[in-house]
Image (cartoon, one colour):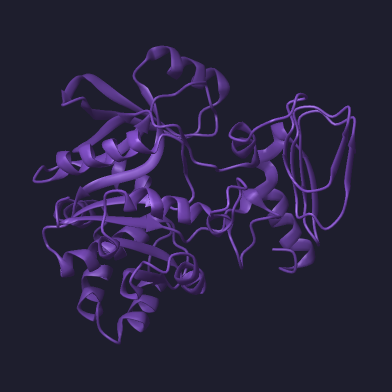
Length: 360
């Protein structure tokens, strides 16, 4: 592997749509959501270790999760764990890691990936990553991974690409579209030139910094000024001041939707962003009534197509439910129609307004 290739795992989110299992003090990337014996961040790290040295893998996370990263990924050097002082979405996260890597290695090629995605076909994923590194090496391009859609899903963003403009089957991006309604998603699926936005990116560090300078000049100046303190005892304090002044914005809005040198690599490696309980349901084994059960003691009577998750502290008896999410923890019981799963974030906000942070 090219010694200038690096992977940055983004692991700072809360995962509020997985409430009440995912909590502020232990979000979903540090949980064994799929009941496999490993947490999501451990699976992510293991995938990249198939072709990347530990010293070339970095983790960006909220400062309160550094100890969990060290516990779950003891192989990652402590200097490769970058603590964010606050959550400001993916653009500041990527700016921080990019400026830091540029100071360490001005010729770095970097792949950024979330810590909580599911990849079923890891050999295919590794092949795609290696193709991505090869493409961005020495090329003025910002590359994103697109997933070939299998259904008109309204929970994902979409990328439209120029079918005639490609280099080694990597295509120029035409448009980005946020989560569409069902009719629009069906149209995208039929057109054949739309992909799901996987939120995985690759580029030469010099090109992403140039993009920040052109498209997010204020953020560029903030991190450019902070770069002098990186790798020094002042880094933590300086980053606190930097983040306090940063806009809360995603890399898609900040850079990818504005830049003209954006490309997409169509991919098919059994991907899910595991963003909701329904996505877990789709990737879990199910019983003859189509129920997915992650629990020790559950009695199901005439219940079908349910996602059931329990901490195992008590017996659950379900009767007559169809297409429900049932999540039982020691202090919270959630019962929600699967079709309303996108509202769980709103329920969490309502709980916070009415009951404080006790249950968050």
